[in-house]
Image (tube, rainbow over all chains, first blue to last red; front, side, top):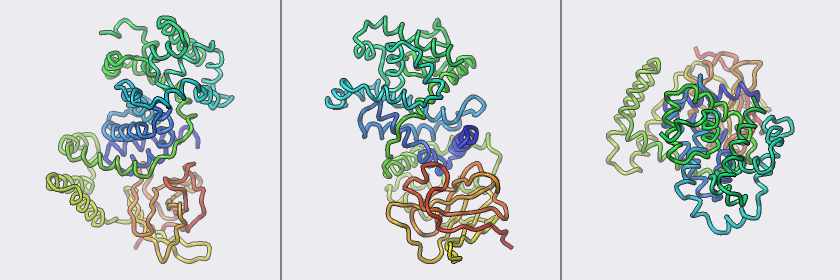
Length: 182
Length: 245
């Protein structure tokens, strides 16, 4: 489906949600639910928590749909921002602490979903090309934050680097991406 | 304010990728409302990273999730019905029928607030059954053998009533999805999914008023509907709309 058609679609669904049309919310779940759940699960590492995050996000979309302004941004991006926001808040509220040790152990030895996420971007992706230009530690720091929801401290722990160094990596990484993609 | 002296582009990026601490995050959320420049930078950052969301592997959403969401919507509606009705009066052009419906509904909800959840559900069901459609167009869908399999009644507001005719055999693990082509040369658009072979009202959003000669089609799709947004499964039946006279 062309990009513009899918954008019109999401904005229209959100305005229908603002008019309290439940089928529109259900369509959002049908269209985007599987990816939204995938994103939440990659951060929260547990199916039940990820389902809670998706459920919360849908209720928030329903309640806040009238605040969405199609003139200011894409409907699709807004929907994902609500989900990411909710998932990050769950993480910060300690949801990750309740993840089982096994999950965390698995994460410790297997960073492959980070590479997968980047490689799944496709060869013609501008983001992929620009991430590819970053030094490994800067790229990892940015991706650990976006994909796993890691804090500066968690990235520092994972990369065995001082906190100040990690903050600088992230900032330089982000600024290189802004330049590369502008 | 903790974020006051930060470089805006950097702050927007860190907010979007999730590196703001809770205090910074609250501040940015407030500032977004009144600082258009920051709002634009946040939107640009979201768009830069959106490809990572789109490239996420899909996870199957359990069917029960929608029901859990609906229960919570009922609760939201019950608690917010008064202020929200006011808001939409101010913004939307007044649709008399929708307004009447909303008012009756809020009466129903207020009356039912103290009753058991099952009773609320029963009232909602009766309400749904009582809602009828004033069709703008009617289409009879026929299968490959030319047998009528469904009647479609499309209303001006894109509510569509589907009545299946005769015995419909829905294969296990599939649901039914109704499609239409508002633009004869454009792609089919989903009007909704349903899984029980009986009379159903589907409500689609953002489509033009249905016209005579518009194509309607029902296909068998996987639970949750076609994964591509276009019909992928076998066709139950199709037909063109006519005006009722």
